[in-house]
Length: 203
Image (cartoon, rainbow, N blue to C red; front, side):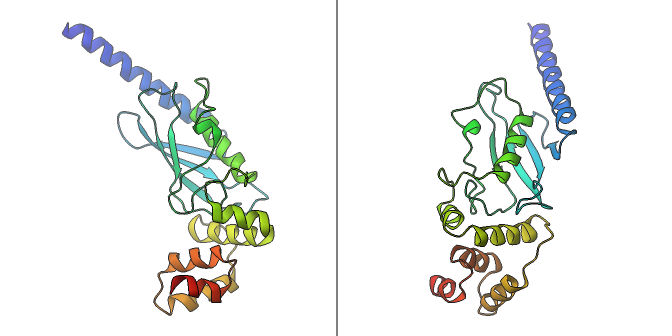
């Protein structure tokens, strides 16, 4: 009996090692990375580069990936650890609205599929099926303001190249009044960088 259990354990560990090695090999070809966080292959750290010609270009976005025991028959749980301004990703929790992470998952899909799909989502938002209603409203009503805000968040949180001196100055005005930096950024972003309206919302 012990021998059978040992063989099952060894087989299970061999499968997990193969799963991880295959995953690393797959993602190495793309602007995406994955890193193991524990020994049982259930927690991974993903990393995707912001797609070119988007407000996220030049940024690096970190993802928390939790692989259920029922994978690949059920999707992994994924959220953004890097703060991001996007209609389909919560600016508060990093939760993602993406069909393949919910009811459109198929067992043939891989974690590489997930990471590439998230990159594609950054390049083509779906504001009519939002995760963050405030961002989606801005996207639909003031696309240029959305792009400027998303670039700013990418610069601050994901190492992107596009700092906005005007936005920085407005944030400083609020932080000088004792407002926490991120709270000031969220308020200003939510009100299209209208300092007066953001101030009213905070105080």
